Image (cartoon, rainbow, N blue to C red; front, side):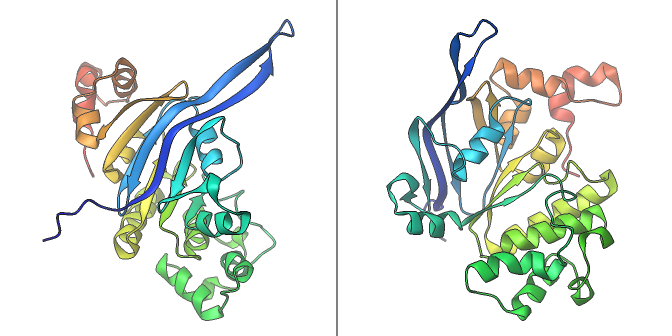
Length: 275
């Protein structure tokens, strides 16, 4: 039995991302969109990230992908601190982290076929083969007949599967899942979530899973991080966070979960079932 700790694949340490804006009277003020955030994501693990709109989740994701410049702090992928790398090396390391977008309707180019959508990152990286594309689509449950079809010919769930296949094309270690099922019908959500669990086991993937649906977060996540006003106010195992939340903001989030019987609202954190 191997008791060694799991490898850290993504580490964020004391990350600070600030934006300057002007108030109603013209005075400049600083918005601390990400304010001292630290976490480590281990191989094969899912870390759920929750919080209300505007809490800084999107800014954090954009910073991980190099679209925002932090004021201070660091981001490491597979032990490599991104800020210290050459541009070429940084791109290679950042390819180990891929994004699955929220909206499968707007994230796919409607003029391209499924084959070309999945082939694009492979071509850029010089790794293209038609067989690889077919294998990736098969991996997400789409057969060879999907290759020549365009996004308009697929359902929302099928489009999200294409997006997942594209994200897997360069064999990443980490997938950042930005509300990956929120735009899908409830009947389709479970299929995509179960696909993500299967792919994680097959490829030893790590997930940073961002979602508003706390029941989905509890089902898919190993640990949960709660974000409020740019800070992580609570991080723990899913059972710790859902069954014994410590921070008042976490308790308020859990108390807002709709339940069938209003008399059971006080017990909401314990009513979420992994089903």
